[in-house]
Length: 578
Image 1 (cartoon, rainbow, N blue to C red):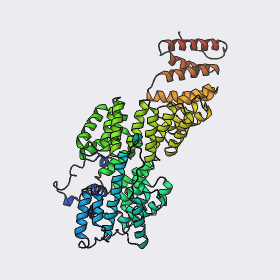
Image 2 (tube, helix red, strand yellow; image 1 turned 45 degrees about the vertical axis):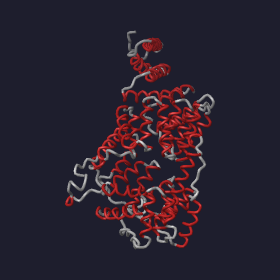
Image 3 (cartoon, rainbow, N blue to C red; image 1 turned 90 degrees about the vertical axis):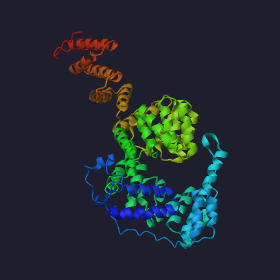
Image 4 (cartoon, rainbow, N blue to C red; image 1 turned 135 degrees about the vertical axis):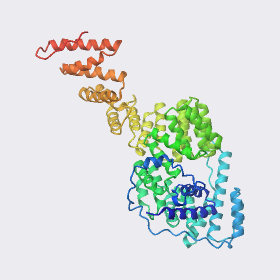
């Protein structure tokens, strides 16, 4: 396994190189991993590190887990050599001027300054500045030509010329790993995903420390088959990539295993803690996720990234006070971040103020048109407001951003079900199940769709409810519906089986209510019909604990059992006071 000091040296050099090329997001990510490496105690001083307290919850969580042996995919080959920087004299002054323009968001000026410079670094910054100039103009056109829900046909008009130039450089071999990264981004924007993947793989294999390249590559891995087909060199950065890719492909156990292993070096990485929290959120371990995010905020109190996910947890737990505090905190930190607007929108949604929630989700989308959570959550709000047409538009935009997002497909199914269009709803529920086949809620939604008056496909509904039971339906909806459907179809033995299973579940969870009364009545009646009087009396005895009409129903059943027993004198009878 690679040593901590080796990782530290690699990342330090990479941060300088990435920052020098204005790849600030990748440099920020690398910097966070750099300080996430546990300090050597011999070099420890409280003044140069924040890890004296050792309070990371993820560190505590994994402290009892023995570090697994390195897998074949993680075995470290000879260290990838860091590329040597070109002579600073070449293009030096012009490059510094162009970088200054770039930092001031004057992208075309930066590109123009480097128009005659031919070093790899200058070529990259010139093309990158031109790409961002096109993106900036595209955003301006989207605002100027904005249609309903922000729809616009604006495109980056620099893509054609950039593709032409970068492809020519690649053919002649006059392109470095950063140029390959940009070429992959351009190809992806133009819809050529196969070539884009190949270019990005070549980029990360030659320079593995550029997290932006890994992120772009991950967005093109929409299936496990595509991911497994990538020919990636073995390097510790690959493990970060696989952890994130597995999470996007909803392979949460595999993702958690990667992050647990990376803890061996990056013991204090806030990024790993946030990613682990995301995986736990997908597994619906809300209590654990809340603890991890609380700890993350203690270590990094002005963090806004990933806090929208934390707000989803607080929303699901209906923790209004905590969500209010979080919304106030991020709003004071940076109110013009999409995450901040989304958190405030969640707060107003929890308060039942759906119009205000929509306003903040719209604000988030003005800041980032591709912010998936805002589109999906805005669709949910429109469903609450019974504005199904707007909900459908919002969900469709979410699908455009990420066609693999099961929540948007599920939302479309719900919206069409509300509009009384079960065939359309069924189509979208199937799409959501394709992307998340082990979620009982999706199977239940599809079963209810089959039960609708227009379809009335009860056998198909039964199959879906059975799948929901196998997927761990914690709410017990599927068992109850299976019992009722079999009862409706006259299959009393099957109905009794599922009523008994549902009764066992309710007893184990200490639940009561109409479902329990219904199960007790059916089982008592069914057993009486089958002349199993002793068992029937057990259920009738439990019914006597109810009051009102339920108790009268229990008494009536007991009378019927006693009368039936008199017709079978050979059977043992117990007399119940009525």
